[in-house]
Image 1 (cartoon, helix red, strand yellow):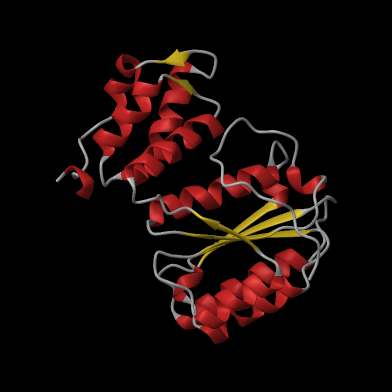
Image 2 (cartoon, one colour; image 1 turned 180 degrees about the vertical axis):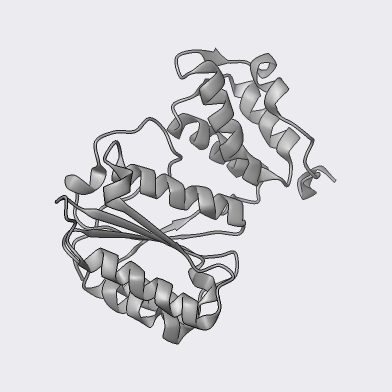
Length: 231
């Protein structure tokens, strides 16, 4: 397997120089229990790799969700072609493949094979879930050295508060401790709304101001379902 870059599970923040230009080739599998968090996780990894590079020339995206068999196979083949074909403009390529959980083990096999010997200038981000991948596919990606990013939130309240706090921190937002507690209580079981809330807060207040509960409350929206520990 090729060299792998350590990838953190952070959210999207300010763009930077393309990570992929200064790091070993990346093969990243993003999974989780909620499709919205998985989608955000894929977007975060893509943003990290592309940075402030030209998305039009660096990035290709394929979504397998809802496709019939032949179109899934064609989309996977197109993704592999993009990874293996040098860019006309030079530099690295970033390819995102979403919805791999809908593919069978045989359909996903070419991606697993690619992950074991990736192109030196191709970076692959795979999104899968909440339905589990076929065991053969998951094991194959793990054995290839792919980086696994699990977006599922913890079930225990104390760990969930820390998880929320990490997301605010990784997005570059400064918040008072009561803000994190308020968001955990208000969003409840609808945790997947957190990334969009963070984006709205960053766009509204920037990243220099320390936010209070009063700053955040107008953007919380409808109250989520009650988490089991409060029943």
